[in-house]
Length: 598
Image (cartoon, rainbow, N blue to C red; front, side):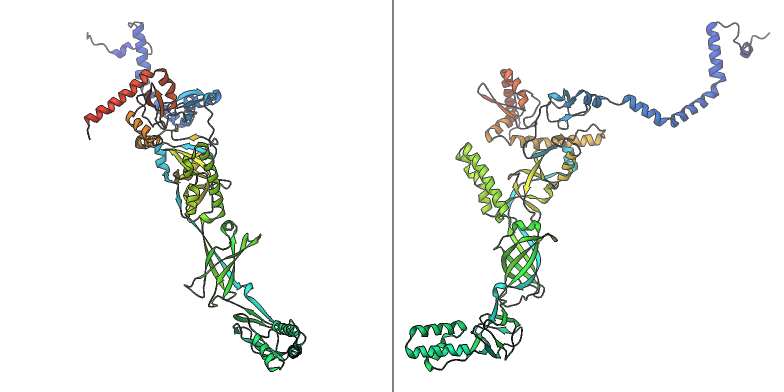
């Protein structure tokens, strides 16, 4: 009999073999149900699980986000907590996961009631701080505010008109009825000159007066002779004719009416043979040696207009020719329909080339330094500076008269057009106080001149203002309702590794610039000492200037510089330790200088 035993014979159908123990039977059933009989169903189960995962993926993801969502912001808002940077207290966030955009250190927690209340100074409407990487993205560029020679140019088109002061009317002066025997000028538009005869009239009253002159001379009555001669002179008889009457004793019967102007006849009233009374109109004569140009200017240009300003005019009929003149009259009322104001210009026209009815282009250049608004602003600035000079001594009186001196030389403080953000109710310019820190300054500006605005109030010479990228900076302040003090650049959103490296590189590149700007605010002696000390005497790893202008303390008669005012209490509490840190920094500097002589 063979000793080989078929294992399948021990299966006993659907029951475990009898010779197996309890553990053996349990293993037999596991092998039967899972590993042998249901092996094919595992593949089907895996496919079903994958299908269910695909169908319910959004639901599962929503549950996952709900269970893992950070509640720090909600908790902070409900509990009144906020997070700030101890090294840069101006950095405040509502999210514990944010970091300081300046030093990239974790933020510390505090209650909002502990936050210092620092209202913005007068004239500052907003403050924003950008990380160096954000400054690069915004393309922010700054320029210093400087004095410039600005000229406001106004160009307008008007009509050439008669100068009413050069219009004259020729009338009959002789008393009583007179007869026009001849008109020497019998055509409208004819040119006349002073002394030219215009008309020849017969007047009986003229003959009677001349006879009275002759009779008074014969009787030797000087008073009557003088009265008769005066009447003849008032009627237009010249002294030569009066002397001839006295010499010949023959009375004159006709009077020659002569022109008193150099111009042309614009209207003829009478014809030959008519009888006219005293005062009857004969001619209207216009002198075109000077003309008026009536033009209209817009409402925003009125402030720079005043009489006496020089102007230049050109006409289409005379290309290349320029006629000079001046502002003669600014009309006292505005046209409500066109919102324009009529202005009258006196234009010299010696050759009578400009004719009434022509169109003419008038150009007016007004130095901004001579406008009333700039003069008033300079006087206000001078009064403020003088008050400060009197309060702090006469040593700064020279600075007090600086606005008037620059104005006298035709220079005004000006900002580029691109730096101004006009909201309609106010004008704002962003000023850089430190590298990456910008303040929105409300300014008062004059009318735009080319690409610049004159500054009436709000800025000083040398202020660094943003020219390119100012709208992006302003947009950042408007994204948050609390526009009074906003600091951005360290958002909690996910960033790629390349962005983080770029931000760190930009921060490192701008760190030295920031430190130099902070140290520059010290006087020359303190700046040299701070540069030699280099690091804070309390926080050895904190560079002087990295947190703003260093704080100077006198400890045991020796000057010591701290990174910020927050280190003062620690420095005063441990003076020996503070002096030791400062001394080590000086010794380290001397050692490095000996190792690396220049």
